[in-house]
Length: 322
Image (cartoon, rainbow, N blue to C red; front, top):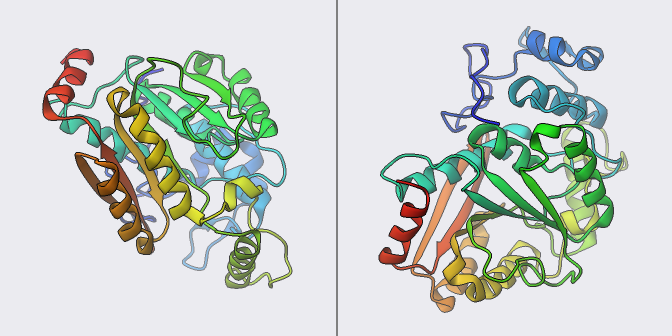
């Protein structure tokens, strides 16, 4: 798979702040999406401003929108996830990948490295496999996706089976040790240009439930409407929340220092940054980046770090064929 041509979208941006290469930056072209995925049509309603929208408080409508976006923009067919699993926001997930491409381009004379020689480790690939699907479609990268949840891996495998062109782009690996991140799933001497991760944000099941109920209240469905649009325990919370998870990732990343160009992870809260930066300095990272992202009013960011010196980084550029 190579880069697909940009689809036409309405002129008025619906999601300001998205990366300029993001196919969804101009909003959702509902006629085109419904043409690509007719089942979406039953969920489309008139928006207050007079255009089209869907009821975002309805998990089935959100899933149908995702399925249509993935089919129309990236050629991905038959995408689905089991009930109760995280249904990802496609524009935001695509943004992370585009910013990662820019990060690699900085070390490649401003040119984004493309093709199967660029290898990415997706920590927690999930039932949706969203990052490998979009990353391979946009840039031709190959991925290894790790996951502690066997049911999530089975779901990701079903998505690959429905899309044979992506079959060689993603290798799925079970993380048998729930407390480990890289250990046990990265093969000896294996190298990656990038690692990416969307870590569990909450520090407890109770905190995750409270956040879900608050979101339901904001959507006008009441606190007892149920969980937010899916999310198993490992997707939503872990001991120490995103800071605790990222600290463990940083500690393990030192053992892979010569074999990974950039380690990265999303951070939902800016309040997590000071603790994460302290941990990175303590671990001896030679360069640390915080890259801001935005989707409408939602502000996000990811942190990237490397242990490689400039000479070692040049070796990676040669490997890309630059």
